[in-house]
Image 1: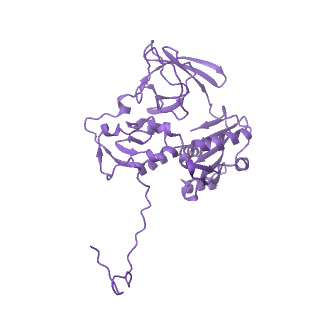
Image 2: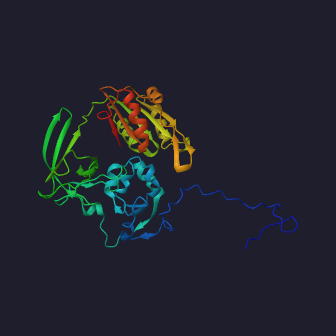
Length: 369
């Protein structure tokens, strides 16, 4: 029952004391896969493991549970980078490849705490000095017909396997081929064609993890090969940095590391795209750095997503134009490296195509986070 203060006759609304209107809470909307629960909710690992798909993707980081479902399409590294860890404790993996800013952003997706009794994290349970695990078995490129393996596969979904570096070959001055032995000599890797693995190693007491696509054939037995380009310290005097949305976080980390070293004179040219000015992350910090350091140039771009045809969910997108890049980043050269992180469509249609027009070799001079 609600008591008001009417001063008008009958059941007419209004009067000297108008009903107080409360603005809608601006917090991020709950995902359909998120249960109705408060932040103190405690959830078992068996329940977390059920949420391992594109329809409901939960992860555990440092004992907290996060529902990443609504972030899948916006993740700079693509859906598969989240889905490979959905339903698991990925504390080590998350910490290895994310900046402090990304870790803070994760709080928007927290839905509860993990029941820790008798629990050992997936990361801690399988963290050898050098290991790997395969990418998600969910394909976004359409089905690929494959011949069923006649030998046991080394890869197990969501688990790390130990592997040993047994050979290194120099292919050129900056390209190496690394051969890793599988746990058993009669095993094949078991990775689908075109997919990648995450290679993990503990370096200086920290987990380092990188994604690679093996160059060896799928029927190689007992080992797999990786061909890796080596970037030596000091080879790039100029960095062209292209970020979209939350893709700013790894690039922010690179800028921060360079500016902390007074001897590092690397020139940095950053173009940062967002849908609206309100979406710009870390703007105050970036602007402050640009004012204090002449070696850093920052340019913000607003790109709009406009509805064109509703049928079939078709939309047109204004990506970063090549004219913007020509005005704000250097031309491709032997001492220039491009760094990019953002939505997959931005990388494909704005970054790669436009950099090629500016004489960048996107195979050798473009790093995508």
